[in-house]
Image (cartoon, rainbow, N blue to C red; front, top):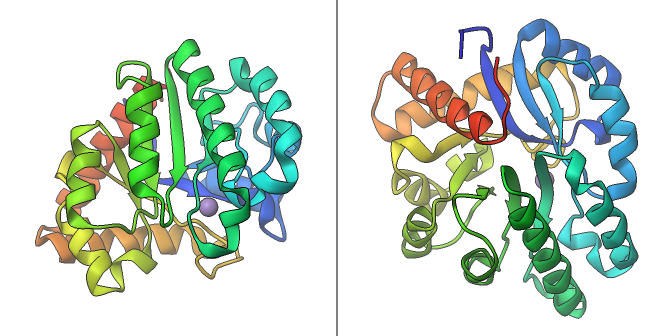
Length: 255
Ligand code: MN
């Protein structure tokens, strides 16, 4: 990759910002690679239109586990659209009590998406695993191989030992500032090998709804990460760029 990308945000809900078009324009100007995840397959067409011909924004096709209960029938649409989407997300499982009643539906959707991604190959998936990390890793192990599906665990907040297991299974991790602000989150981040770390803002769910903050937030997370891992910021940024390049290469994207 030639050095034309200045920074990377691997999980951002641009379509939930007050001004998605302005945000996308800002990413292009800042040369900020952004993975624009979606929460329902119906949102994909709009995101696709917004991001078409853009260099730095890539839309991901998803069905958020929190919406699985009410949006179950959209899984068919998602499967139909998958051949056009190298990036998949937000998908995953949520084991919080609030979503227990949709647990079996969530699992069924997640497995169907993983099986489709595995069949197509070259897919990068941004995965939600709140209170469900063990199940997410079990589904990945059962339905995908690292040669065909590259998982990025987004806002991973489980134990250090499950972090290790995820690393062994080939997962990458996208880190946001909320993870770095708790002691347990920082312990997880410290346990991730340097070559598996990526950055995400998960905006607007992490508190920001303004496009002008996205660049500042990515840089601030890079600074926090460098501090947490005891390396120079320049080295951290270089490592993050190398990691991003590996992930994008897997999806067939080059700059
Ligand atoms: Mn998200």
